[in-house]
Image (cartoon, rainbow, N blue to C red; front, side, top):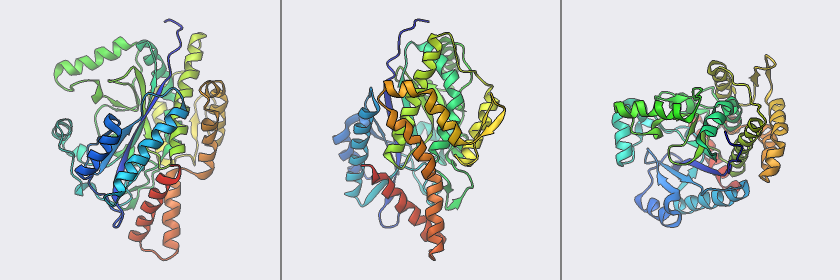
Length: 377
């Protein structure tokens, strides 16, 4: 495998929920809203599966600084046009109280086919995620780094958790989104692959059988993108705050380069069985950052503060290369503030303590999410 440095360009995709500013419940995107967003943002904005969702994607960015400017423009434009219709976007992976049964899906060929193929499973998909693309060539390098980067997916998930509530109930989980998403086929941590050819053969076997139309129907937590020469991380909950999203993107980009640096020196991150990585994935889903993850090398559970410090040290050279030291080190601030799930629960508890009903307290959580969306714009 040639030791040519990949570009390590990045792109960020985010899905938002639209809420009515009076009721704070979910609301469908009016056609005029989508038209206005498309006029300003062209192909960087699109409807999502449900009518109450909207998706954006940055341009190809070489640095986190570029990604910040583009993502800020995208978030601001969506918020500005939503406000014209008495709506606001929130960047949380689940709405605190709206019911999935009340939502309708977008009338597009792709989504109509999903509705048909996945039946009752897809109707519950009232969830939003954040995807980070990292440009990596050649394709075999993409697979090699996928195998190694999988180890760090639970760490990224733990920091990102923003979905504690579902249908007006506290689920007890920090990331309920994955509980819903994992009902789809072809989800979860990626299997270990030896080459891009093996990946392509596996996909083509399903395509030839008519089970899927292409690789876009492979919904692993980390996958080779079907559209771009990238490795696409799909593990994270979407972030209410812009700066937290940028930190997760910077960590993903820097981790990928760190693993590439090991590879060109004939070293590699130890690849653990998916069964073990999935245990850490569950711990992150359940506890976020509060109970630590398993360090399989040490054979013990290590608290997230120590794990974050280790990651920052591991990728220090890479963060400097990408001029992303501040964004990577912001992971410490995210730990100190607590995940969005922790903050949402704190808002709910404070509202209840002042005499608000459960329904009113959940509305207070939505107001909090609207404020956080706008905080870094």
